[in-house]
Image 1 (cartoon, rainbow, N blue to C red):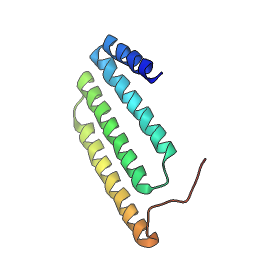
Image 2: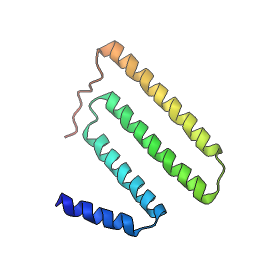
Image 3: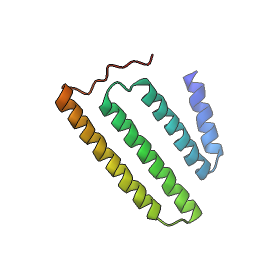
Image 4: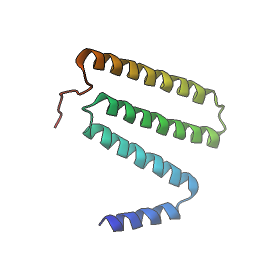
Length: 111
């Protein structure tokens, strides 16, 4: 079954042009990151890593859109600045949590 899915995916990717292939990759990777984020959010460090992957994915998609539509790069620099600020605040919160509780495990279950 997995083999047929891989063959179908290769056929679809090879039959599309480069732009649609990139957008399909962005959609599939964001879907995968969303599923991983929903299934394993017990440790804050894992949450921060998934948020950084989302930021990188959004950065790649915004960069592609700005290249295709001939926008200026000002928004990209603002976005990078905000994502770095988000990462530093997340690490500060993680450090405070580890110092106060001893670990980053959240004993919350949604399933």
